[in-house]
Length: 249
Image (tube, rainbow, N blue to C red; front, side, top):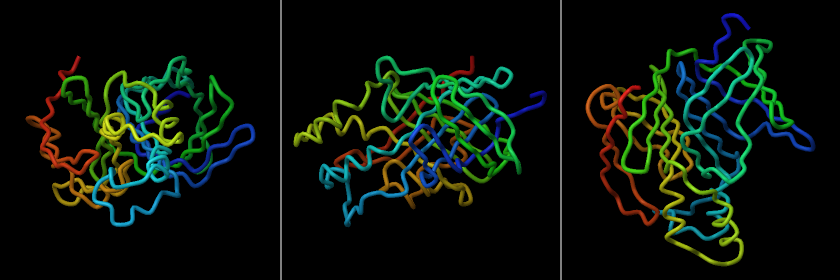
């Protein structure tokens, strides 16, 4: 493993495990030297049918959107053993969640093979770009915004630190309830992968499909001053957010 590096833009080709196989979920993992962001969107998503806000959607569509996933934080590689320390996660941190640890090794054609250290799975990753990638963290109260970016692309992750698990919200929707305060809190989290178009970051894949095609951040904000984001809440109300960069420790 001498000289082995996980830095770069990885796309998952497959995941297999006992009784399961998935080759269609769209997964982007952008890894800087230590910091990372990861987004996972199933290939099938609901037709938003002209909705202008997530609140316009019915329970079935919202449940399908909740099948998306993302997390961000720091990755530590020791030999072949990699531990992903999640600062935030789209579905929060359920009690008793297993550590995210994988055993990594180079694969054919520049691929990387990841075998679960705590669970029986294998993921095959294909390298999309070597970077270099940068990573930084901004905060706004109990929320964190993590961004990993390179010359061509970026991945933005927003979530509440120590957010609760989402199981109770899913069960409420499945049972016919519509707890809009909890829905607004859950969908305030966002994971968006995009491409730089000149100085603007334009989303191509997001946990919130209404963000796709939008320019959501300016490249210049990543290197100087506060981070300014224009976002809309669950009900479609637009707001300007100002995030302050976390000091490097």
